[in-house]
Amino acid sequence: MGVVISVANHKGGVGKTTTTVNLGAALGRLGMKVLLVDADPQANATRALGLKKPEKSLYQVLAFQDDIRTAIHGGDAFDLIPSSVHLAGFEKNNDVGKEFILQEAFADIKDHYDFILIDCPPSLGALTISALTASDYAVIPLQSEFLALQGMTDFIKILRTVKTRMNKELDLLGIVVTQFDHRKVLHRDIYEHALQTYGDAMFGTMIRGNVALAESQSVGQHIFEYDHTCNGATDYLDLANEILKRLNISVPVSS
Ligand SMILES: Nc1ncnc2c1ncn2[C@@H]1O[C@H](COP(=O)(O)OP(=O)(O)O)[C@@H](O)[C@H]1O
Ligand SMILES: [Mg+2]
Image (cartoon, rainbow, N blue to C red; front, side, top):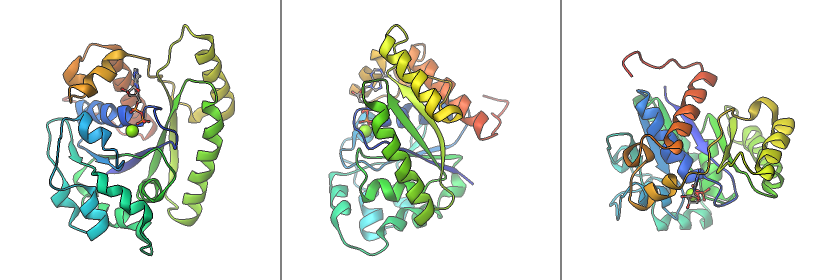
């Protein structure tokens, strides 16, 4: 049974898409069968993986309840359900119980994957709620910048509400600091403060600022294709290993 993880934070630019894509690729390198789901109408993950105008996307699954299997695009490192700009309409429609459609759709494919990672949009609308309702865990990227911790409290409240009202299975898997620069006092202060506030929920792995992570997206590759020796590749592999450890999942001997 696959573990479903939403990579979520209602703030934009904190590293959700970068984390979803490269954590997915890292888990794939560790022998896990991975599906990425791009749930952001901006389709940054879809584009970051070089998929231009996919015929089928998450939109058809959520809007028309098309068979989710028909929206899966197979890849080497992982499979992908792409996004489409039309997904924005899902935020606005009034369909009763629409936040449960994704959870129901996953029931048909959960057995085929070890991990399903969802890249959430930078909002607290129906798409993020749908993703959290369909998830076992949330991973929250936290950008090392001034005021980053303020939004975190609000987001954790939302997680609690979704757990109470929509999905009892939902838990916080962890908070990961992104774009970290250990030479900057502000970054070290933010990590220390986050550690004091959230304790064990903080991942020990920090994703360092690494220009290769941004460059790889502009050429439609994940970081292991672009440069498997860079800090970004090392950090996301460390994060993948830390997540497997937290979930008590052992890595197959062959990888
Ligand atoms: N660790 C990092 N080092 C350098 N650039 C990064 C890193 N993580 C993300 N970025 C860049 O920061 C920007 C925002 O990241 P992104 O993953 O798109 O955030 P979100 O999905 O939360 O909006 C992108 O241009 C991305 O390439
Ligand atoms: Mg994004």
